Length: 132
Image (cartoon, rainbow, N blue to C red; front, top):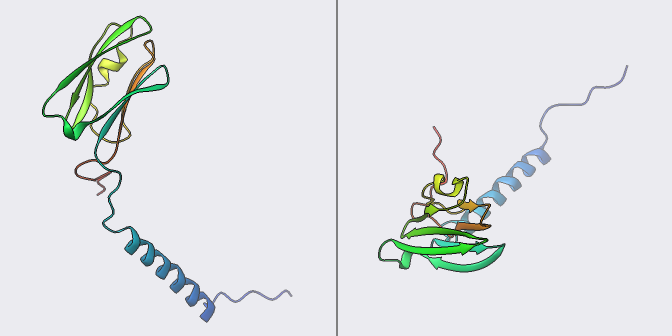
C-alpha cells in the first residue's frame, strides 16, 4: 500500500506563515497615511485628445464650459466637488442622463460628439466602499 502524506504542520510551515505576515505588516506601514493622488480634477477630451484639465478644488462655484464637437454643442457644468453635463443637443442625451459625477474614475461620455469628461485624483473622504 502507498504511504499517506503527513498533514501535520511542520516548523517550516510556521516560518512561511510568519514571513507572509511580516511582509504584509511592512507593506501596511509603508503605505499608511500616503496621499492617494492629489486634488480632484476633470479631464475633458474631445475626439480622443485632451482638450483641458481643470482642478475642481480651485473653483469658487459652478463654472460652465460650452463644448462644440462633431456638429454638437454641449454645456458642461463644473463644481468644486464634481461635474455634470447640463445640456446637449445630441440625439440620445445619455451624457445628460448620467447626472453629476463626484468620484475619481467616474466619467461622462457623449458618443455622438466624441466628448468625454473623466474625474481623476482623490476624493475628500477617501472611502471607496462600505461593507457590512
